[in-house]
Image 1 (tube, rainbow, N blue to C red):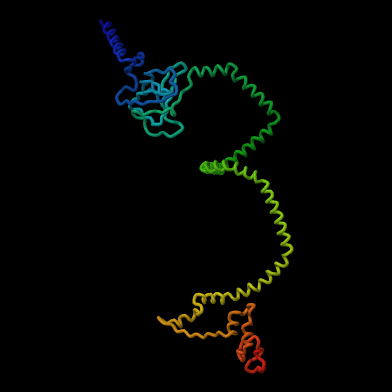
Image 2 (cartoon, rainbow, N blue to C red):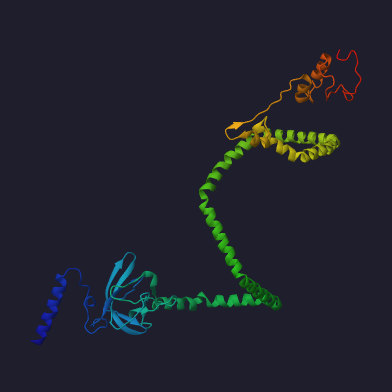
Length: 376
């Protein structure tokens, strides 16, 4: 009777599993009682692995050879496997923990090995729903891989070659121990110098990196320049003869300029030497010249007298207008080709007798003798 009840229970479990669709994958697909990671406080995480080999659900999850959980589900995610792991509640692991498929022994069972990271500092804490990414996954060598490597090594794959290599090195280095010692010493010195210059090497590499970045930023300009250069070179090639003729004429012109300079250098030096006194006189007359410029705005009234004759809303002006020919001659024609013509005409008319100045009177007109034909 007891056997019939057990058989009925097994048949009912099988029927329930079959009626649930495709979830039945053997007894390992059912949760086993008493396994780790099933108790109160347990939590579930997932791990992405590149290869799970022949691992099955209900396989162990270990931390440091201690079983802390169970594999509850294995599924495919893209081109890698995704394992669902149930972990005991008291297990504390960093969030960046690693996951790998390990083997208990040479012929032992497979399990999932969880461990803190070794290359970086631990960060955070694994909790319910955490996912260990594929970048933190790994795999230990399998028994087949170990045996295959041993077979390759013992079957002439490397032992004989090691002997040949050792014998060849012994032959090559025989009698050259001192040279090899010197080479090692020089390599040590070179390595030490390179190590001392590591900061400069890094700075140079960073400068090259910045330069490359600037070139990258100027890539459109460089592309445009490289596109424009062929057309510019083509124009230069077409104008080659013109450029040659221009350079030839420039050479001839340079020769003429050099010859002219050689011929006129003495005269040029004399002219520059004569120009010195003129410039010196101009510099000496500078203050008077700058003061006379103030007369232009108030001509014919000097600037110094404007405040004297202009008083409030009226101005006083006294003018003496002398339109005699000698005065007009002295005022407007002095230094011109007509200088003295009006004075001579006035002398002919006899109107300047006894008046100064006169270019034709060599003495004081008050005491100069009078000629009867003066003025004719």
